[in-house]
Image (cartoon, rainbow, N blue to C red):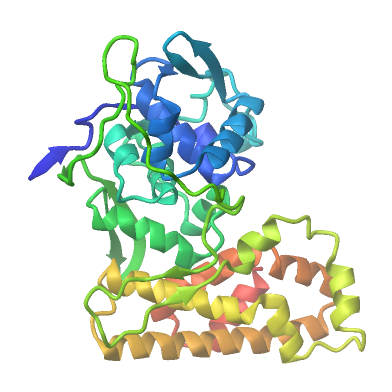
Length: 400
């Protein structure tokens, strides 16, 4: 049986908050949950015990991240006779990018100075209450939903989504994203242009399969209706890590016993961006390259070669299990063979470039920064178009 995605109600979700990289992922999940309960107003009244149960987090984790939202000025918490009242604040800290910096043109601007300034969408309670989804999957859905207010629109690349949600690897991202696909909340397809796979199209479905009974718990306004929740099952007092994604992500085989589970750990992309690495390239060079000679082994360490191999496995898992592009063992072998050749060529050319660079420190910073992340993501998405890896990578590194 299919039901409307908004069958249990919905609220506004704001892009300003979901794209703020300083806010932890679980804090964004809590924010989206409260927004879903706020409906057409700005206040939410769910009991804390219900929030813990719906989001599968414990009290310490909830308290820590709620305090962060309150401290940063996104949520206000008030005590009432009926319990806590959460107010979704409309005047919030702005994103780093101002409207003028986003669109530098000789034109006039209409500036909306509140939380909706960068756009918003609606987040359904049905998703936030679904016990089969992880908190990370709910945050990913809320991020997607925050872009839907303008209808069909351009959407950030996966690497940008991961960076803004602080998800450490493609494997971990797809582990949670695929839950949304399997539950029917999101449909994804990759369009072809000139016979080649090009952009991804994401659809947030308005009709979704009805799941098992979802516990409604308290009414969103308990002073008007609803019954108190009984004793909540004891939850682990081990708070979720500040890194909201697991260190390992295992892909389901989906009935394919001949394919090994893909296991990945947090890649270097997010790890490096959690630290101020812009000034440590000279230290890195002195530590590893005292002889002023870059070897392939030392460059492997610099580019996190093993993590890139896992990124390749994760992308293969998405194409096989979600996009349906690798439908046979032969196609999977072709993908892995091509990507192995691309990765090896990338290693060879990076080693040569570092040894001949006038300013290797600058190149090291780029390899450890978002520029290299974008370059490698491009290699993954265009793997089947690359006929000459040597020439393609040479051009890519020139544009790095």
